[in-house]
Image 1 (cartoon, protein in one colour):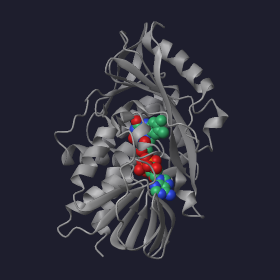
Image 2 (cartoon, helix red, strand yellow):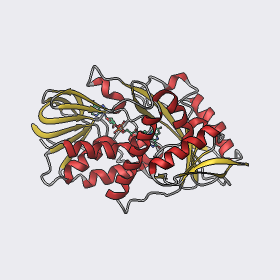
Image 3 (cartoon, helix red, strand yellow):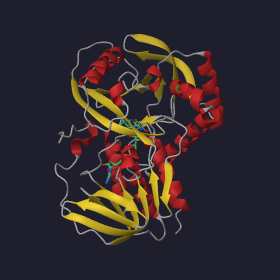
Length: 372
Ligand SMILES: Cc1cc2nc3c(=O)[nH]c(=O)nc-3n(C[C@H](O)[C@H](O)[C@H](O)COP(=O)(O)OP(=O)(O)OC[C@H]3O[C@@H](n4cnc5c(N)ncnc54)[C@H](O)[C@@H]3O)c2cc1C
């Protein structure tokens, strides 16, 4: 088995999975997958006046997909990417997703006002075209405030016109996942437990102690790019994202979130290091794979981009990892993450590169309608 390559955020994970406990034979709500989606659902279920008996399981010791291995951008989107989304998904879908991401960000802030969010904004360094100016005016109008402005931005040795988004921020994803688990007080979390079959009120689980059967009232399958293993008709397709983190580094680059190459390449600063991800559009092997192994080719590409971002190459790569995103229909935008398998079982998966902002909104909506 491939050795786990820990993400920067995962350095604080327990070294070994917790020993398995006795699993219940029946629960009201079963959540498969303890990424952001599963944890936000468990959190909102726990907040209900009469919390349901909820069990969250994950086959990993913590979570092993996208949530603990992403970039931690709490973002409502950047204009270059949205401009290209307009071509295939249409302006209404782009504006709607932008507003949903804004609502999701507002939920994170509302539910955890003391949680550390770096209010750094984001900068889109691609050329500012007339099309972009038009789109940012539409987005500002939809938001009812001036979120996007054109201003000079510094990247490496260059100063250029950029689109700045004042509403975006950054967080430590694993810290937020832990907070969610801690506050999901009525939910039990069991790790190292894999769902083999979940349908029509019955789940078959594989645990370190052997097979276990469980009955449930409702189940939510939140396994993202792995949804197809439990739902043969799933149209959630995988895409690997790779990230590097440098040694501590000096630079004159603006300390905002940064986007290049229509959002395919992205960066932020964390503990005086550059965290940079991307390359997915350039390397075929990043599409369709669920393999969590990072590659040498993408590392070399990310190093070139990092030198441009920092303006020099006096640094080393200290971390590299991969995470797997899920895309509904293989597309970045336009599909619904919700798919009913039967009256009791639903898949909630496929947030692409937007799950940090979107999962709280989707979870809150599901729990509001889950009155059974
Ligand atoms: C490199 C990278 C960078 C990203 N950057 C950002 C960003 O900056 N901002 C943003 O908003 N989004 C970003 N994303 C996307 C974001 O991380 C995802 O949209 C989000 O984490 C999805 O959460 P999830 O809970 O749906 O899925 P996941 O986090 O993938 O969780 C699925 C879980 O299901 C578990 N599982 C799978 N099968 C089974 C089974 N049979 N039984 C039990 N457990 C199972 C897995 O172990 C996993 O823990 C990024 C993604 C990647 C890969």
